[in-house]
Length: 95
Image (cartoon, rainbow, N blue to C red; front, side, top):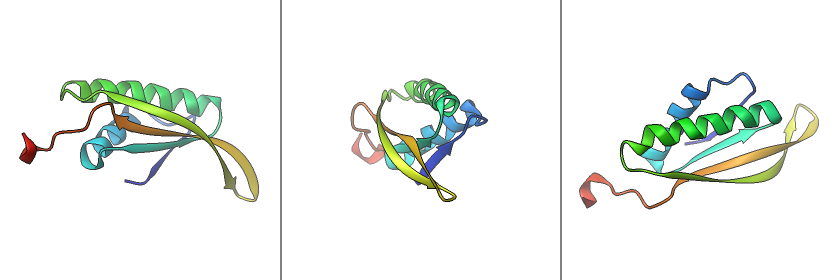
């Protein structure tokens, strides 16, 4: 799964679905956000995704970090959210 870019206009429920699918398929998800409103939407999406996955016994946590990115020819400071299950996922063949 690639980096999901979240904007101030992103739908938190749709983003949460993408996060949950990424965690189910590859065990992780990554978000890139620029600006306070985008951070708000991303955190809402992470909280919603946590609810989606809780029914499967999966608890999420995330780690934020700063990054410098280029948008056009301007450097901007972005926040990257690395989202992982709190405990390793058990695959069906491991159960």
